[in-house]
Image (cartoon, rainbow, N blue to C red; front, top):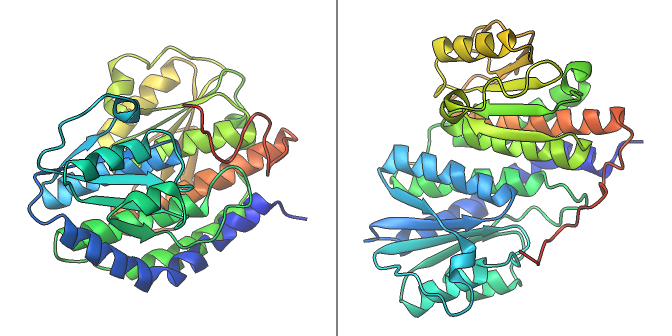
Length: 341
């Protein structure tokens, strides 16, 4: 009998297809509301924060739009942040994450246009915002989220496409590709011994791949209970490389932002410290000398390959959790919504 978490992983392609038209309509309205803004302030917690990093990179690259990551605690209480010129984007599956409602309330008070991405249209966050992008994937039944992250990723692609006034070529491919990758990943045998590392896992990426690395590390930590952290490749090379060594594993997320030469360099450097190395790469890239090489059967732009890699990371977390005999659907210490930070 499969876990609810695995069922949710498998459902993502179908759910993305179901929200395609409604999500596009929401994205058109949200983009129109931001006409004349000079920058965007975006906030989220956990997986939503990782989606915010994806938005920051994609909107910066494709639209030339300055995107600043908000610090939600700065909007609580009597504090006030000057939001002149800003559009505001808040991302929350539940619509109840601390600090986000306060951010939207301050933006409203200053007359700034607000957009919320949420899976809960009756939540305080959705009710306080000018425009809502409905994730529209139904409630998450497992504690660790899957489909809401995929829907948020999809929403970001649609919103940035409207902001640049030209939808991404082939964005309708996202749903069937994710469906295929989920089926492939759940049927694949993975290098679990290498990933079940006594000194933990480090996941690194660059550009779109950095947001992917953050989400994979979080899922592994939540579901499998293994200490996992993430870095951009540049930050990793700047200091943390070599801090682990034997008994630790490095996972390199290969997207087009990460050159082959740099990937080879970081893998070689990690191997010299004694780390086990695993490369997670799309179909157009070539091996980089890692101990284990995972070729995800996807060819396409980084925003497409990126979500495919996230799905693979979800499955890795699932299989590691099963190997370690964890309670997959409700890992110890986790709750669906954190209201205390």
